[in-house]
Every structure is written in C-alpha cells, then in structure tokens.
Image (cartoon, rainbow, N blue to C red; front, side):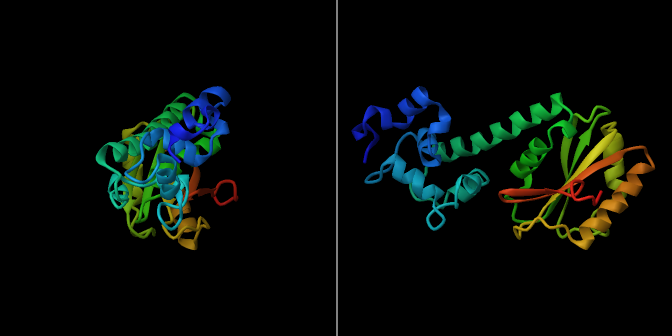
Length: 227
C-alpha cells in the first residue's frame, strides 16, 4: 500500500513525530530514509525486502554494514539511495568516535564494542586494528594495521609499538574481526595478545583489552580474563 493511502497516524513520518523513533519498526525507519519506492513497489515493501534474509541483507545490522558496492545488487536502488544508506553508517561511526574522544574508553565498554563492530564487523577478510588511547583512556586514533589470518608472524609487535609511540599513546585496545561469525578467541588470538602486551610494556603502554568482532556481536577478552 502506498504511504499516502495509509491513515495519517500509520505513516512513518507522522508516527515518528507523534510517538518518537522507538515506535517505528526497522522497515518504517528505513522507509523514511528511502523516501520513495519503485514502480509497482511501495517504499515500505522495498524497505522490508532490503531487510529480508532472502532478498536483502538479513536485518538492519546487515544492511548498515553493507558497502555501496554491496547495495548495487538491489535492483532499482539508485546512487542517491545507496549514498544515503552508507552515509548513515558513517555518521554512526563518527558519533561514536566523538563519544570515545570525550569519555574514557573504560567508562563505555559497550560503546567501544559498537564502534569496532561498525568499523570491522562486516569486512570479508580478517583485519587487525588498534585503538590508541591517551593517559585518560580517551580515543586518539583507530588504525587498521594488518590484514589476513592473524598470528604472531602476520601481526608485527614492532609496528604496533611504533604506531603507539607515534600517537604518544598511554594505552591501547586491540581488535580484530572474525568473518566466520564466531567471536570465540582462538589459541592464536590469546598468544598474539600476550606477545603484544609484552612488547608494548617495554615502552610503558598498557593493553586494556582485545575485542573480537563479527556481524552483530563482539567479545571482550579482558572480560573473559584473557588480557
């Protein structure tokens, strides 16, 4: 049904303004971003198809982790709509980065996980990244340093130390993704954490955590007593 044929209080825009964004379903929120549907397909139907497991990205998290190239496979989703969806994800990343620059990372562990999920969760290959923090554990920078299967031979402690010194970091949070979807740490993950912890201790930089992310989930190795 076209939006204009819905009762006023059932239209996404009016519903949001009257009752707040929490009253809207994922499809309704997405429909507000898309604004218009396609020939023979209303905007709500298009939004639902984008969220569907078979026809789209399997939910809002999957959609927001999609790249502009991923979105090209959706018939009728033009450059403007693709750009808007990718922009929403980038805005979310920047908002979380600002929060972590203003507050200590240890005060907002969930924000750290969400921030890393937005950056790493949808990548198709393994990426090792580091959050560099100041003496008050506020974010200085996030850098992706290595790609590929992680091991002590593919992640070089010397390079991590050099980047920590470059940023004048007092502490770091290590992070990497598991494209397989599991966030359980491997023996290699544990060994790598201890090797980096020892190397960074030589220049008085603390390893606060090692976060493993996958689409829709994240695990803190510190919370598991592994850091």
